[in-house]
Amino acid sequence: MAYLKLETINGNLTIGSVYRLFVVGWVLGFGILFTAIALFIFVSAAITGEANINGVHVRDRTQVIATFAPVLAVPIIIFVQGFIAAGLMTFGVRIYRLWSPLTVESTSGYEKL
Image 1: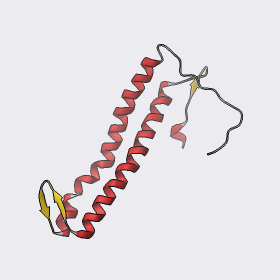
Image 2: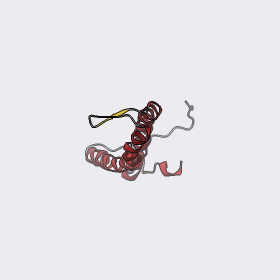
Image 3: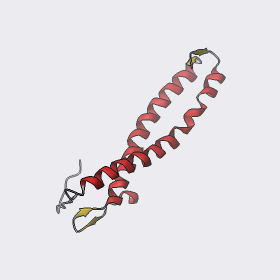
């Protein structure tokens, strides 16, 4: 993945690399988690045709599917939260760098997990 190319200057990790790492980690981690949960809820409600929406028991399959339309905004929400949270974490790393540098050591060989 070319977007996740981490850069160093004199052995120190750049702030831009830290930010990219946080954004990609947040979006992938929470994206997979929330997508799995949302799909489970949506599929189970669509199959049974029943759902409890805001305290109202809905029993029509078409209405149940229509009430889950706001779930389509979840990817946008996760993406925006990724930028906000990554910005805050990067700010914390920047404060940490005032006392200690983020050094990166490289080795000639590595084992893939």
